[in-house]
Amino acid sequence: MAVDVVSYIVSGLIIGSVYAALALGFNIVYRVSKSINFAHPALVLLAAVVAYLAVSSGAGLAAGVAAAVAVGAAASVAVERLIARPLQGRPPVSLIAATLGAYYVLKGVSMWLGGGSIPQGSLYASGWTLRLGPVVLGATDLLAASLALGTVAAVAALHRFTSIGVAMRAVAEDAYGAAAYGLPVRRLTALSWALAGVAGGLAAVAIAVKANLSPILEAYVIKALAASLLAGLDTVAGIVVGGLVLGVIEQLVMYVAPMVKIGPLDFAGFHEAAAYLVMLLVLLFKPYGLFGTERVERV
Amino acid sequence: MPAGVFKETYLELMGFLRYPIHRYSALLAAALLAALPMLADQFLVTKLAFYMVFLVAVIGLNITVGLAGQISLAHAALMGAGAYMAAWLTLHGVNILLALPVAALTAAAVGTLLSLPSFRLKGYYLAMASIAAQELLFYVYQRWVAPDQYMPVNPDAKMLLGLDLSRGPGLYYATLLVTVLAAWTAANIGRSGLGRAMKAVRDNDVSAEIVGINVTRVKALAFAVGSFYAGLAGGLLALHLSAIDYDNFTLEQSIDFLAMVLVGGAGRVVWGSMLGLAAIMAGQSMLEMMFQGNPVYRYLLLGAAIAFFVVKEPEGLIAVLRRVKEYLRLWPFSY
View 1 (cartoon, rainbow over the protein chains, first blue to last red):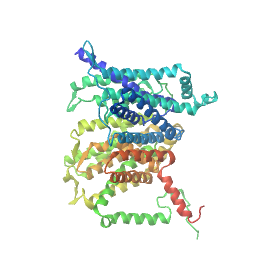
View 2: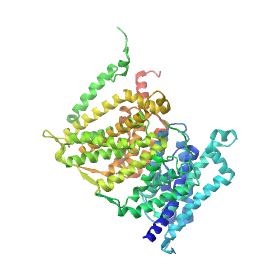
View 3: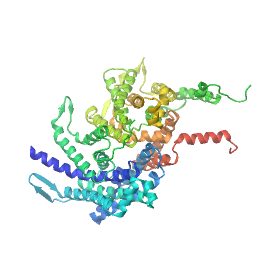
């Protein structure tokens, strides 16, 4: 029993680290543009499809990663240039609808690349396993988790330690102030979006390695929004906590749910919806998350 | 004798039929709509009636989003609440015409519940809350309400005094009546005190609060009214279909609804909704015919069209229509 719980928690940590990487794209964009990029799920899907096509053409996983990163960055910059920038200063609903339009377009491109539908298949297969007492970890788990955590760490380090990262943070914090110091605000904003695309591409490979490529891949990214909200939309390093908590909650729900039965309602399988419940509860009770800055704005 | 039409009271300015041309075109439209089943062929009439169902839903979302500025991506799920309620009632022997208002009220109750996040949140946060609500409701439909994907609608409940409301002219006239009533009410909400309060909340909630509008109440009402329309549309959907399929109530359908509102014209409750619905649903039907149901082009072209319109034409097709009307009014001069 306890052993079961431990292995559920460990797999929650694995998928949670992938959630963190998937959510990173939302946070980077939110910091710099104060908007949610609803095209991100399709961007991740597109990057995963490109990576899959590269791998299945025999180019190897490294080439797949490179292709995913390139496509992710290009798509993200395109969304910034064609949608986010012209819509600056317009009400959120316009940006939401326009990025949802971009979501459709990117999804259409991924389906077109797959020949009419999202291809299904695995990106990386290996029979190798690591046994730690009762917990068994496959090679895909370890690869996905390390790629995901590496992505978050790299972005956090870039933001913290490099001068270009500091400049990006400055633009995110106060665009007018940054412009007054002579920083190229537009270029740095575009760069931040590109970074979000790169993170999306890497996360796409991680999730495709962990959960295989399938049409429901984008659902993971929508669920990752819960991780973003849990951590707070304007944090970067905190996203790891949000992702891990979300992953563990989901797995624990998966463990507990089959035993729960309220009247005729059977809760088996409820873990699929658990992330949305977390999202709703966070928004109701702690909208700015664990590490986010609270904006006092009450009506 | 004045040369032209002059309005002397505000009441006259607010009227629906302000100019002679409005009166003539309203008469013409009414005659055309009433005589349509005699003029057009069956397929076209049924299709039009089916579009009207969605028009009711879009009008509802246009009240929530366009008038009150509360973003909702859960509209399809609310429509589902109405549809399932209506279907369930017909299975228990309730006539569909009685089930319609009950379905609408059910959806309104669910929608009021969904307005809870809006008391603290706005903009992107509210949109995310509605996505979460949409997915949770979808899960409920999928797992608990209709585990076999379809919930049948009792065909015997679709009779009224021996007239079959589920096909042919009966279906058309029943849908038309409900749609016209819904549209007329919606247009009146827009020019009532409630509508003005909604617009105030949309434009600046802080100042709305300061001038004494109960913002919380207005937001709750905006969601309630919007979801009432969604539920009504769901009930009409139960009238049209022989079984309710949960694939009608996905997140993508919600996205399409929002796109219809914005492409058509947010805040222009009836005409904006009509234009948006016509543009997007007709576009979808055409793409489906052109590419034999291949979904790739639907996503590509529809998505591009939505993004293009929102970026280039913030007020939506209604602004295009206004320019066309202005051009025709001045024709053959350019100004």
